[in-house]
Image 1 (cartoon, rainbow, N blue to C red):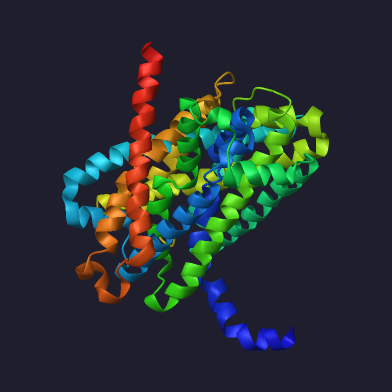
Image 2 (image 1 turned 30 degrees about the vertical axis):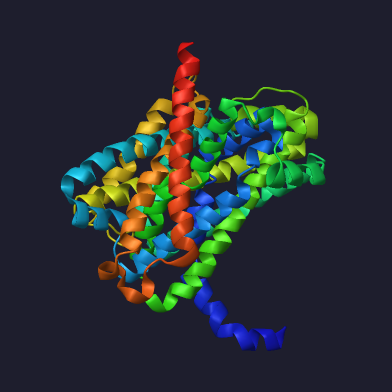
Length: 424
């Protein structure tokens, strides 16, 4: 072990210094809305809901690596590049669509935080409204007061709580062979012609490979100031994040499949999934699932509004950095705060549960992905922007193009099919 440390000490230290953007962005895809989507999908279709997990992992790894490479080479966020090369009109149109989708995700994350507070019985001596307000205000305070490095440490510590889903999955006593077969090789044949099944798969894709995630990894890397010499280490971190986030989504699906799905229970969100798990797998599994939801809500409620704030300030030329004071970055921070406060106000109405819209919100995220891929393709293959050495080529180039094509076809087909089914 000592010899190993001496041999690889420098590489390990460089990796740890670079680590953060890829891992945090990938894991934040498993926010409260993501947990809800995986739960609802698994409750409806079991492990067949994870049928695209390998392709999704590869797609997330490829797109995040391309985004990281573009950010490192150019030193700019994706929003900066779009404004510079496509003009303000395109920037405004894109931002409106992006904001609507992202605000939906923020609303899910606030609802997730509210649900996790209630699930963990945190309100025995305080009303849940007071706890929720305190948590949101504390989160805002931390983002404003802490610098980039300290915030990143909090993000990385939060990620550790996702391990609760591993134990929750194990406590569900799954059939591991069946889980692997249905999610990796052959889905249940009964679902092949089910239009809603394919709609759900796009929603699962949309909560994993997100539009905001592509923008955030650009901005976060530019904020961190990584250079081309860090590229290989950042690539390793991005790939690790893609594998890890989909491993946890797979664990969530297992926990739900072998408790709720096999017992034919109906759930509409992550909170009802946790409640349904309780009598089937016990209090420990229930508690672990709820803790995981709390961590996912906290991470998502920080990262998603930051991603929107990054994009707004980049597209319209304002100061954007987590190292700036509130006065210097007032537009950036104000936009971040406004999104959380909107979500908080809505969530304070006791009968409102926005998790019911989770599949639709993530479907829209999936529908936006090909648009973002278009910009990734244009920028990453432009020699004037990237230079000959860093342009996208080979497998990554064609995999990204092919994915954009097939996702577009799937989105259009399910949309048309859904409209026909709705009006029949």
